Length: 115
Image 1 (cartoon, rainbow, N blue to C red):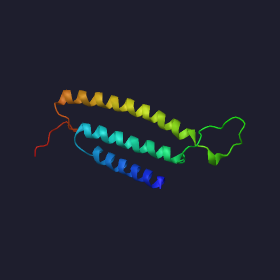
Image 2: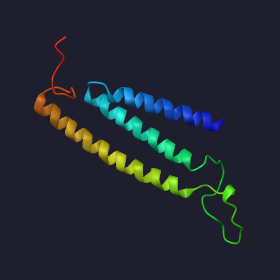
Image 3: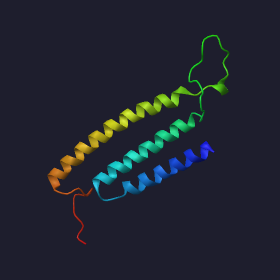
Image 4: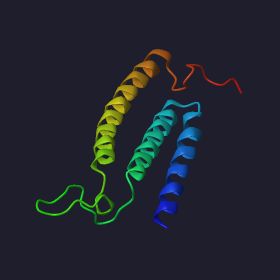
């Protein structure tokens, strides 16, 4: 059941992020990119096996049973991805604020709709 919930969460985040990414306002584009990065992070964590109460490392003196352990590599990759996506979101916001100051609009193409 946990796999179904995680798969639905990844699907909803991906669909919402893609829909917001295609919107004409810059704030919506930033939120869409953030949602897509959350979906990718959740996908990477799910690829490391969904285990509850599993130790990520081997204790000293115990036999190694790979089925009883969690994989620490996806957790490390996601932690790194969170830091990088925060930095990229900050940079994107600064660039978009500068573009709004230069063009006077927050449309991604720099022009207001005529309709």
